[in-house]
Image 1: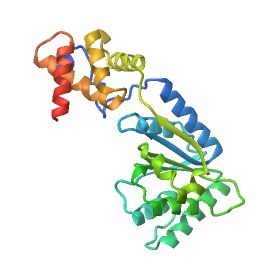
Image 2: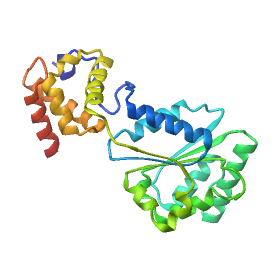
Image 3: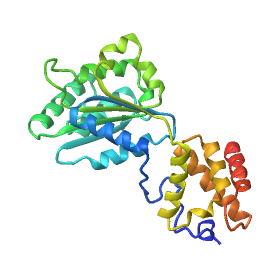
Image 4: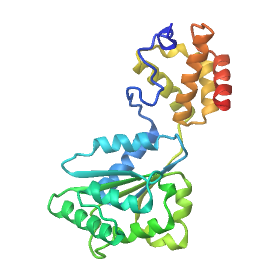
Length: 267
């Protein structure tokens, strides 16, 4: 019998590519509120948090909530692009013809932002993920790139998403002009114990299951090991289901979770 079927689930709700089951937490509401503020007011924003804390989920939901007739969203990840590729990609995504020369791409990006804002009445929203990989050179460029009309108000939203050390980088004296332009800065701290319990039970309900398939002490064991990190909760719950199924248990107990924790640490 499939592990999922054994516990009365229609699918595994803890897998990354499973059907999205939106779960409202204090933090997800706060992140959504801050991101909406950024969209309305334009300028630079910073969303940070340790790996697996839910930054990508928060950004994905916010992106989906933006009206496409009012916002033009461009997403790029710095972990996979060279500096020049980043500017070429940004120019292309905004609707310009990418060039091989950085100054040409700069001009194209600025022209497209102006065109979108003035002609199309659209706000460009530029999301830069994995921004902790950003070099000092790019941070300096961003300040120049999006401040090309000193006296005009911001025409674009630039959201930097990354690990908490991004804040430390921006505290360097050289980045003071850019840091002064950040109008939204939010760090995702992770789920509280109560939110973690709710997270697990809502995920199980969303997959047609009964939250009681995880015994109370099993939930506690998951939460203690995951330390408020949704990605870790997902990983441990998936591993616990497999362990419990292989032992032919009818519910997931703390022993199964401890074995799952051990397996995940070895893996």
